[in-house]
Image: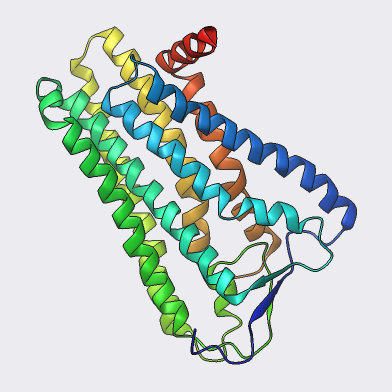
Length: 303
């Protein structure tokens, strides 16, 4: 942090300024965060305990749920407590740490969604080779690669951030620390850094999204050769994956593939993918998956 001059603490403006609205938001977002942790935690617990959910698809789903908990936890607890604070502050080092973990877990989720699409592709398009290709070692390797990919992506973001000098002002017009709001506080021109972020976050999201969409198009095309029951089961599983992909990538592409702004709409979109989407994922996967629902019933029946 040698390049930072006068600024050691940042003031966060938050989502809303009205105290009454903030108190209502505190209750709503606290319930949403609790539902996120409990819902995703139940999936992790169920997959690891249940003997019927040991296929690669559920192995990846458990890690996706774990990432959802950590991803949401990098932003939401601080955001919730700030709703009751008159002055919302965060240290510059804390801000940089939040950016690192937010992008680390976010991009790890992108890689895991891609891995899950690959798993469905092999299962539907190459069923005879599925157990050979998606063996336990390969599954662990794909998960480890997802975490590693997220780490390297986030390191690029942090290296860029650490090169900047901050000498004032120190007010972030957002409810958490992210790159674009922080760049506005830098004493130097950040146009080059903005292009790098566009490539590292925006274009990466676009390419990942197109890859996922293409893979599911191929999967749906190959379903013509399956039986009616096979098509129904595969479509149900793929529909859950596609819904999660759209919920995650839509807001991310909207924010990172356009010039930075401080419109209230941008903050609300950010709320959707940092607070709401992590809660929706376990609902989507459990409501549309009979195996997960049955495993949960057995698990709680034993309890």
